[in-house]
Image (cartoon, rainbow, N blue to C red; front, top):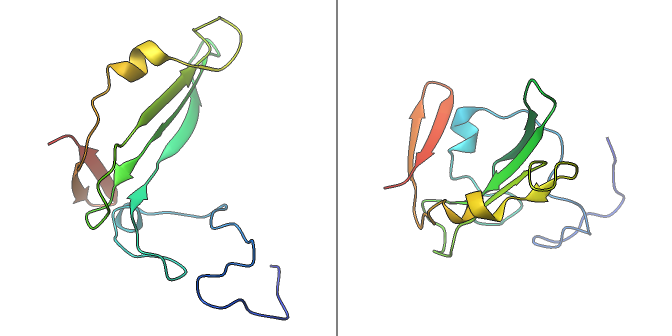
Length: 117
């Protein structure tokens, strides 16, 4: 683990990233805890998967936190079906996804779910 001789003041991250490899649970994904003095505004779950034919699909969805400032939330969806070779945004499928100003969030065991109201 990297250590520092000087510690930045609150809100000054010394150009450190606020993301990195970590383990997550449903409760922590659905929680409202802020980090580094910042208030949680939204979460952006993302990932990439492949099907049995080797096609790749990548996605990211912005989800407004319960105490977050309302703003347009987006769904970004990429796959290699657009041109058959490269990973590209699938604007047709993205356009069909409704903007969700404030999703309904539920926690069932260790699984958090967000659904449109």
